[in-house]
Amino acid sequence: VLAAHSLGSHPAVGLVARAPERVAGVVLVDPLPPRVSAAQRAALPPEKPDESRELADERRFLTEVLFDPAQNPEHLLMSACDEEVARLLDGPGPTFGDLPVVVLRGSGPPRLPGLPDSYHAATEAAFDDGFREFAAESTRGTLIEVEDSGHNIQDDQPKVVMDAIRDVMAG
Image (cartoon, rainbow, N blue to C red):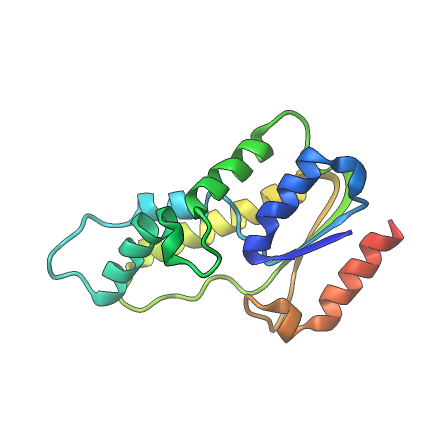
């Protein structure tokens, strides 16, 4: 049983796609859907010299950091990870087949000050679509919204994560 948090969802999808015989089920804990950053880049307003620092930082993250492994602690080419996972999810059949899959979702992304409401709405929509897509990649997929939790559900609501793992182990 694979249990993966956030960016860890990407190698989990890769393992299931490449060696499904090694996987009995999957628990994705507030996973990072692969199409979120592309939706965010598309929602960025045109660059202006007087834009807020927050908007400039977000723009830099989406257009530079994701494309430069030296700028993240995992040293990953995160844009390529996104593309690979999207390609795997777009392949024939549900990627997870009939494996039991539980997708745990914390409260939505925080509204960042200095960023337009339209950007936040696009970010929320991309996460919503991504979480549903992950769950739909199994004929036995379930999406669970976890109350009173942020992104780190394993810290905020560890019992929910343990219960999901036990449920997947039970088949």
